[in-house]
Length: 491
Image (tube, rainbow, N blue to C red; front, side, top):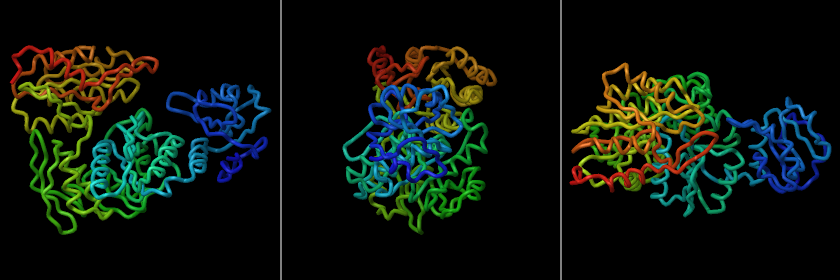
């Protein structure tokens, strides 16, 4: 494709050099550059693409796209085309859409944003649509899936170039719908720029990612951007930020929830160790909903899914069948250890989600809750003490351990959690090695106890210093520990 076609939608750009050149492909990662590629220099979360322009040119880039305030004086770019733009991320999104022939226009996109519940709600909507014979792909935190393809996700919302390629693959696989988790980072960094959503969901908002957004007001504004590109909004009527969100968006709105919902609501809620059951009211219809994921949050996530799929004309039989069989990796997931105690893995990695899962488990457990958790490094430090206080207040015993320490000292992170723990009378032990921490928790568990391993959920790795990842699948870790445990806990 000619460079001039890739950039024809640009506004206020400055071009130095020839645009009548054939481009092999677009790249924002300099290491992937080959002859006749165009390199788009974007600023990432930890790396600045502008620092790799020289490398991209040396590897064969014939054109580069940079922002106007970036100086190229120290680089020899005399033999290549330079396109200067106001925002290189928007430029990347526009170029990617053009290169892949605007795949999103050939799909019906459903977006889901919020602090908690995105993944579970996405799985529920995807399964209902598939049960309704609607060919559906999904893009999210755990996997990107379509047809018989399943790709492990590296982030909740892919970079715009990768996203457009994925959407093109879904078009080629004859998908009709795509359910997509849309993170606040993706909205703020224009990864989803130019997309159009038929329906988008707001699940809730609580303190998270403030290291990136700075404050809750900016966080909310980032979430609101999704609804600027949506025809319809399905919003949690019970969330404290909903009144403010409603004032920030102009699309049509429906609400779901338990106390302040107009369109989709529930009553007679029953929650136990294995499932949730409730009566659901929608369009003057009464249905009994059963879902094998415990917790009050499951009610909210499923109401959102029901609301969305009803708007898409899914039949109630398909909704009931899909919800009764939905399974979400790492979300209140019970690991079968064949013991008299229960082991549950959950992705709860912030204060509100940890409190939610502990509260849910506390309602049905007849023994103790033994909690294993840590906090990620290079992320919101403020939440660590708060999470320690929540653990001390709601768990019967807590093992403080590592999560993804990244480039922070694990001991420092655990010490900050401990400060919150000390504000309570909660019992705890610090074990830095996560596998040893899980083993200790299972060792002290007795009949009817629940060992709740929180924070990593579906993740199959730990992130250490210098972007190093090691294999760490908690399901396998738990199974290995259980297999070597003494018979005292065997049924």
